[in-house]
Length: 431
Image (cartoon, rainbow, N blue to C red; front, side):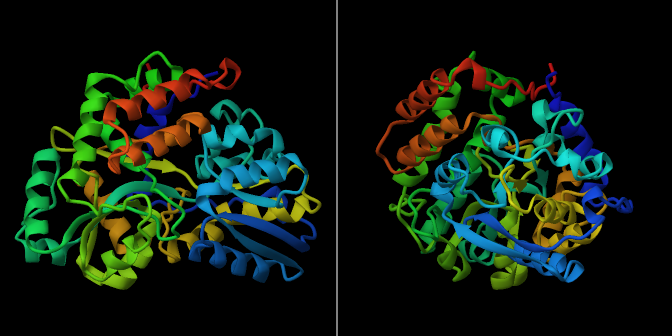
């Protein structure tokens, strides 16, 4: 059956994830019974985050005979490296995974965690995103750890110095703000990779550009291949976005810049498109100066927040220590594990546990006050090959190497090449 995502979006928007005061489920997991011991390896998508190290510490304290070895893998090569490892039977015991199209690619190599973890635990974190056909009646190949958001971090101190009285909400306001910011000697928007891996995650921007124009029904068409990326409305959006670079509102070396974070923390850059996972280092470095808002890439005031039960864990079906690996996944979504995620600045996936990070709490509160529509992350529901093509072509458009039309045509070509057997329709609009 097709998973009707619109209902889940409404549930997220109304649930106690958005700061209501409900309590966490006391359920225990099937994996927590019996002896859990031995070493397991965990592959991290990019740098190992404080949430991961915190989870490992808590897990090893609970199970003194067990150890988890976290291994950092480069984000831009992660899926290729993981594919090579799991197909050869040399993969890690546990690997960081994302729902939707990402997870579907690795389902054949993932352990069915429903045999180790109670259904009530999956329900507490909306684990259906990792289940076959997004239905918990089917095998479940992973667990979400966080309810991540895409957004724009901004330094209010820089905006104040430039005379920008409020954060922009649409293209016209963004253009006006960037003019003032650049005139004051600051960089308006920073793009790049602090690892120097090349490029940036432009699908974060595209989630807002497309949600603001074609909505979830349009996303359904893009996924199915019945709607083209190369349409006037999307080409226009990408053209406006790419013009930020030609107007010198961004750094020119968007494909190679490694100082995007350090310059933001140094007060040289006003805005940085990223997500809730970056709130901790931003608040550690900038304190109350830093805030977050939906990316204002819209012809009308933006009224959506991109949010999804996101980054999680899968266990390799070839793990030599599946019990301990599954126990770690179970611990990560337990009330204790989710509280560790909250204490380390993440937005927990589990209902009733709140993030402790000021920036994340602030934007979640604003989402309720402003009545923003909650939409998912488009990249999670595209085939991985399409995500790769979309990211690459958008990055090149921002760098001036492709026109907006050419970038959208490349996304169409990648979509057309997806075999029908791998084309999964999620019915995001619920229609």
